[in-house]
Image (cartoon, rainbow, N blue to C red; front, side):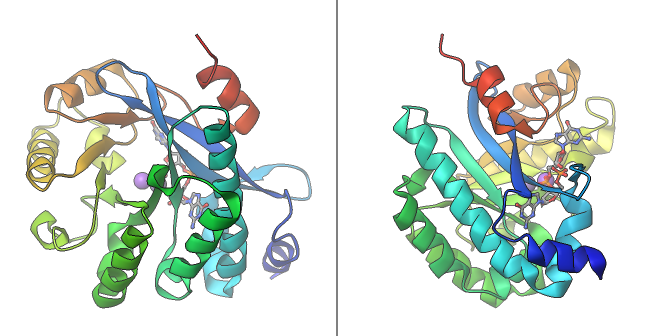
Length: 253
Ligand code: G
Ligand code: G
Ligand code: MN
Ligand code: NA
């Protein structure tokens, strides 16, 4: 309860911050995008993980207002990079309450207009299980979000008991293969088969594939060999504050 009221009290302040993790192109290993990952600073100045924070925000409903500020913050950062000639895909995560229980379409539309960012670089990451929890509402929202010009990514794909054939009815542009299937590649025969078939189906459905949790070169080489377009993971970079991200990944050369 104390944490909840502290989270509520600090909505819209810089106690809510994004760390940025690079996504790299599988062919040339150049940074082609980022995922913005929430960190919340406690009274001691320590960064709390969204794994602890987001469930409390969701339960208390604070996620709606906090999320509006975060979406605005993300769009302002995207615009800032675009104004400096840096064109990266920019992914934000949207929770169940945000997608299904708020006016997310209006919130994102407003943030795009107020920031002046080009929305075709904005990606909305939604987990498969959130979509499957209320298929009709999710479909309605995703169609409206797509109409704003943003891209839709399915996060943690492969864990949520849906099928790709089913998801093909949804406006989905990007599929992120869950870390769980990546971690013991290229040794685990089941996961080899699973990742191969996800990639093949996704490509037939004209979706782009991102592998998350890429930690070593043998994973990277296997994933490249089966046609994955983008990698995200500790092999290429950890989530880090904006200044470090800019310093390490956006240096001009
Ligand atoms: O970066 P980290 O591993 O701590 O993130 C854990 C999870 O928290 C992510 O998988 C993501 O789904 C969720 N998350 C991260 N940032 C945000 C955010 O800004 N909003 C929401 N709703 N979820 C987030
Ligand atoms: O749930 P979502 O996929 O949005 O979350 C991304 C989370 O995954 C972040 O919290 C980030 O810290 C974590 N992450 C990113 N890359 C790696 C990786 O290579 N290995 C592991 N174990 N976790 C990672
Ligand atoms: Mn994500
Ligand atoms: Na994920």
